[in-house]
Length: 200
View 1 (cartoon, rainbow, N blue to C red):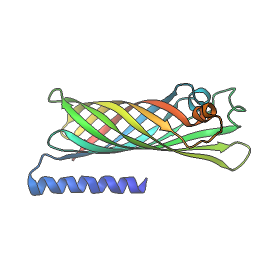
View 2: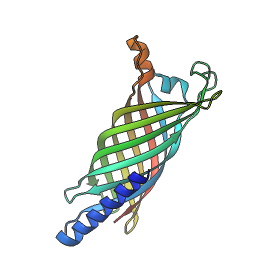
View 3: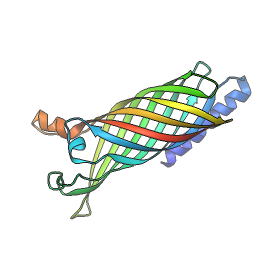
View 4: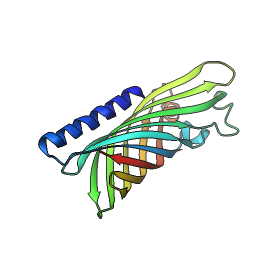
């Protein structure tokens, strides 16, 4: 979390310095959001867990040709579905941390409205707590993401946005049966977020 904040400050400072030195129309921004994320498909995360809810932070560096790079950090929380506690190994308090790195492209629809498309890579840290012990179940996964964002300019550097994103999850669970391994290690997440952005 601290590393992410430091990186975003460095990106913003670098972009601001480039604008002053070269006169380029390079724009950097940071945003904060709330989001809901639902696992989809025939897999353990979709069948045994309720949707995830949480918050996130992010930022972009956009070039004069409307292409850029972005970072997102999200912290999400869920619960085991009623009736699945024993099937799920008597676990509670599922938590998902997601880091997204992506390329983005902006389309200016009007002076106040624009859309951005995103595609990139994702890293997931999934943790769960055994209810009868002090141990945690941990899984690290990789994947990729695709999404879009609709942005409305309020006043000057301030904007609000709504984003829809699909994240693809490939975990590290191993089992000799390929079908069981796939059931516990693969998933697709669909998320909707609402947020506030400030441009530098």
